[in-house]
Length: 306
Length: 319
Image 1 (cartoon, each protein chain N blue to C red):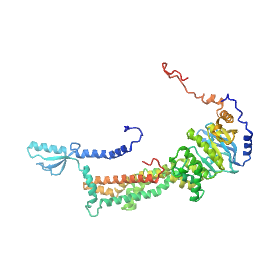
Image 2 (cartoon, rainbow over the protein chains, first blue to last red):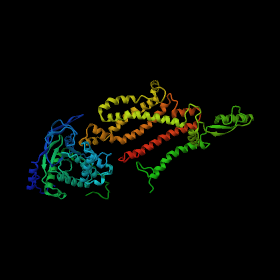
Image 3 (cartoon, rainbow over the protein chains, first blue to last red):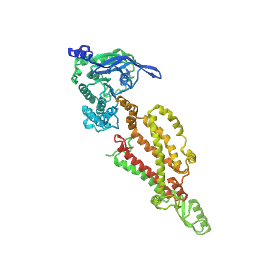
Image 4 (tube, each protein chain N blue to C red):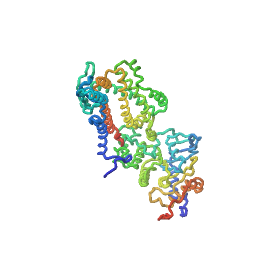
């Protein structure tokens, strides 16, 4: 990729620059200030997140990306309130949050639908807890199911659905609570490439049509660039913010942009950040090389694969 | 078409499954029949037909084959009349057809003494004892197990003692139970309770702990808290596994029934068995044992069938 003449990922067309200027004027939904978290293990304490700060504006789509072990899952779980933290602040609409709550919806990588509930009942779960009457909850749930295009499956059980459909139900279930923010922890990580691309399309459609702010964890660079307004790049050991990238690819997105110069420029930057050229010689791929010996017999018909 | 019968973890066609299930009963029956009807297999005794001149032989008497042969030799040597007989099995191994007849006649024969009970009355007594023992145990054991599996505090407070107590053999409490509760059904119910309860708490607690924690996390992000988590996630989430546990535990309760009825009992199926064994009606003994098995298997099949209807989301309800 390096020999291609690409613009800088910082170059933004006037429209894109204008959009980011307006985006930053929107109200702040989520503000993270100096978030630090350490785990105590038998080998001493490990800093998982160190001094993480960022802001997310209303209806913004933020992707969090980083090498494995950078604590991106820990970050989103902390935001959801499923993990506690040592210092710093997490503010939702300016108010600090403690513990999990329906104001922050979450979609997990594993399928977390309740297997004993039908699709409709799964989506009704949060509504029931919120004290909605049965008929009102049912009516609302059906609307959300319709939004993710699963009306035909409203009375099916999760085990009858494909992986992609399960995640669509999970999204509908989280959205039915009308959370301020939707946290997604590698939600499409377990899906095959084709389903994954479709799901990305669905998610952008949903995002466009409802008032929702999304924080999306992924390790897939293309996915991050395709979905995000801004990408929060973390680095590992300890998990720190490396850069907050404003994606220069114009909105609305379409799969045809995957080969646009802005897209490739952003991808090159992400590659540099996540797989820095220097690091690999020390302990990366070259560090633990396979110990290969030629094991092809001398009289083999195909001597070389080249 | 010709799939192998033995393939690791591969499903068989439903015809083969049925065939094998039937065979699992037919094979033991076949072995039993071989021993009962083929005269040269086993048959260690001889039933006397003609006593001959052996002074202590009587017609219909069973003697060991060796003794019979020895007496026959003696008679032959002395030139006296030889005894005759047919090879037979000991009285404690009745043939299948005898047990089959007994299965019917055990219900129709009047008890030998007036204070004794008919077989169906004995069975009803036993089933009642099991029901109350298991019901009372579950009434406390299931909620306690669920709480112990959900809250670490409850687990630490109860499980160490329960672990200790479950090693105390339930029958050991027999005398104590009789002393405290008298001689009727109460001590029997108490023993089934003791035998079931402590295992039940641990099994249910473990089942509860096996619930996928991701489901709890998902529920929390949807706004569920303490009671909501317990009643809307934990309990429905474990219900199908809990049901399976209860089926297994009910089987254990049957075992403890037999133990319980050995103690100061004058009713129930075990007492019927002991009584019939005393009269050497071994066909009735076998019939009664078979009836326990049939009741157990039938209950389990009904419960399994019911389970598939109760928990339609379970793909692998077949157990």
